[in-house]
Amino acid sequence: MRHLIVIVMLLVLALVCGALLAVPVYKLLHALVDIQLHKLVPQVISITGLLLLLAWLGHQKRLDRATLGYPARPGATVTRQVLTGFFAGTMIIAVLATALVLLGIHQVETDLEFNLAAGVSITLRAMFTGVMVGLIEETLYRGALLGALLARMPPLHAIVVGSVIYSAAHFLKFSEAPTGLDITWTSGLLMLPSAFYRFSDPAILDALLSLLAFGVLLSLVRWKSGAIYLCIGVHAGVVTAMKIVNKTTDYVPHNTLAFMVNRYDHMLGYLALLWLISCILLYYQYTRADRGMDG
Image (cartoon, rainbow, N blue to C red; front, top):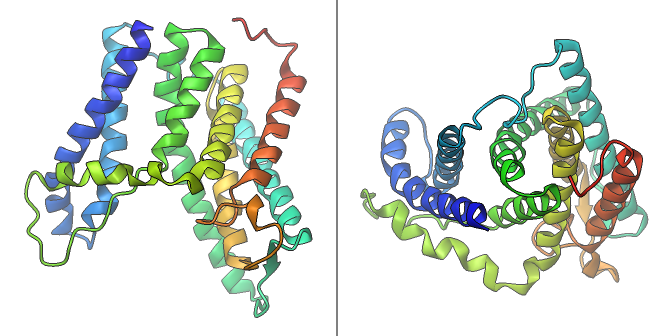
C-alpha cells in the first residue's frame, strides 16, 4: 500500500510540475515551430512523469533495463517481437472494424477512390504515428510505471493499477487558451483543474473501460514476455490500423446499434470492450502455462 501511495504522489507531482514546465518549453519551441500550449502540456506532463519514475526507481536501486522492460536480447529477437506485435495489433483493429461495418455501425466511405499514392501516404503517416505512440507510451506505462509497480506489488495488482492510470490519462483534456491571452509561467497550472472535466461525463464510461481492457492486455503481454518489445508492436499496430480505418470508413448516424460505440470517436465502446476482453482471455489461455498469476 505504501508503494502505491508513492506512485500516486509521483503522478500528482508530475501533473503539477509538468504543467509548470510546459510554459518555458512552449516559449522555447514557439520561437521555432507553430505549437499550441494546450497540446504541449500533456506531452510535458508525460515526460515529467517518466523522469520522476526513473528517479524513484534509481532511488530504490531498481533502475535497470529489465525493470524498464528493455532486457538485453538479440536484435533479431527484438525485431521479430515488434513485428509480431504490430501484426497482432493490426488484426485486433481489423476484426473490430470488420464487425463495425457488418453491423452497420460504420460504412466504407461512399466517395472513397483507390489511389496508390494517397494510399501509401495515408499508410506511412499512420505507421509513423503508430510507432511514435507505441514507443513513447509503452516506455512510460508498460515500461517505467508497470516496472515500478511489479517491483513492489503482486503482478495482478500491478496490472490493474497500471491499467487504470493508463486509461484515465487519456481523458485529461486541456482546453485551448483564449485568443490574445498572455502566456505566463502559471498558465499551464491554471489550465490543470479544467483538464479533468471529462470525468464528470458518464458518456466516457465505455471508452474508459475499453482503454482499461487494452491496458490490461498490454500489461499482461509485458508481464508474460518479460519485455515491452511485443507491447510496442501491438500498440503501434493498433494505432496505425485505427488511423487507416478512420480515413476509409464513416460512422453511420442514428443506427440501431449506436450504443455499442462511444459518441466521441465512434470506435471504442462496449463492442471494443467485449473484443478486447476476448483477446485478454485468449492470450492468457495461450500463455498460462508460463507462470501463475499469483507470482
